[in-house]
Length: 457
Image 1 (tube, helix red, strand yellow):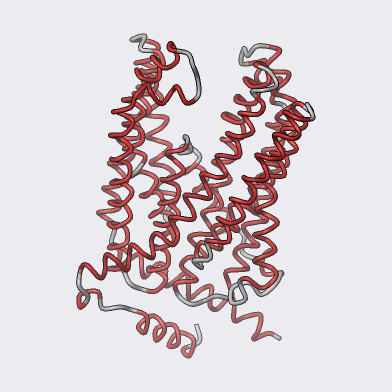
Image 2 (cartoon, helix red, strand yellow):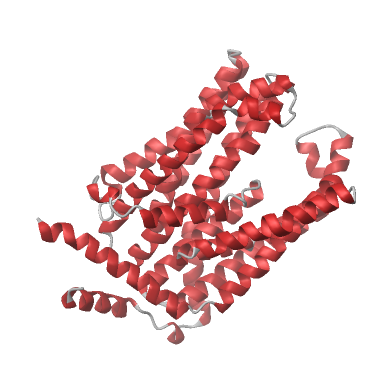
């Protein structure tokens, strides 16, 4: 590397290093909390809005018929959620690469990495399309009711445009979160959700268009925020970090692919429900804060951020844990009038409460992994805990000891518990000074890469 470039980088890093020891703990906590909530607050709202879009669609489909409701629930819960988990995980490569580059003030490369992620995620989406095209025969082969499988096959085809909407949605969200430009995401999510409610009522209830009406509204609800985000990024909302489309996007795609695949395996096992939307918000906050501080060269600030984010998420998870234990089956009456269903919910509520408590820590630690860029290690941990611990224990308890749903759920909880303990150990044992060095090597490589085109002109 050119000595002048190396000297500039070292000067930048030293100039940005803080002196946390001279600050009062109260001031550090307040400062870190503000930085965390700038990312976590809008991220939680946006993810809950995205999840809410699916819930609203499901509610209106329920007005069409029981078969349609069962088919929609099956496709959205199994096929769409699986695809969403993979693409959401893969998009976290943007958080690692852009976060560390942004922390190191190498703004020019953020737009390039965003475009590289578009290429990788779009390619991955193409491979997922056959799953949606073959939904009906897949469900029939698994023994699903034929009428439900047929309707599910039709609904799955409507979900293909939704599948491709995740590519700009997840990547642009990560790109904007890195720069603390989150509010535009929240505004667009709120606007889209409002339009979705109105349009669903018009097309499904008023004009009786059935599944096509419900799905047209759903597709529009997923794509409206994308159009807004893309317009904001491309048309001047990110002048420092978006320098236009570049052929550099097609160069060095392999690092993006490796991080994306690891992230997809790491996160697609962790998408559960409303409570997960909160945890995923803190995941985003952890990844942004850690990547920024590592890019800045401040290991102490990175560790402080990790502790602060984990404890905040855990505190919220504990409140929800108590809430669900206390109300148990009463919450079921928000969705049904059946006393039998309410009794079943009450029976499962302790397991739900435990899930919420564990899910308030595990995703945040996954966010730390995203920020540091060691998704591959965590991917192996997650897969091992899920398939080697959670699934076997759940199968034994559910089918051998005949605990049924409760047994399977307990197995999954045990897998998540082991997963959480392992991630805590990895995080505590990590040499964060070494992680700073690794991040700085990445930043140095990006800096040279960004300088090469201008030097050759």
